[in-house]
Length: 81
Image (cartoon, rainbow, N blue to C red; front, side, top):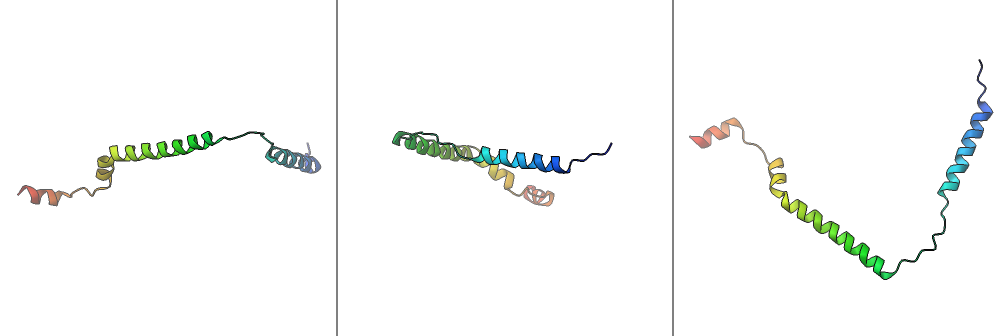
């Protein structure tokens, strides 16, 4: 069986390109965003920032211990003596 997909392959790519171009075209939403919506967005961003700061503060000692250098065996022997 010999596959002759030259022109058919070109047509498929052409059709796919047209489909992608049509899907990327913006549609008008006819939406209205009032000032309350802006306030909600700002308060959500501030709340997210506050929760991230609280989470970092809560786990600060674990984070600090993770990056802290662990003492070697000779350093621990010196402290005991």
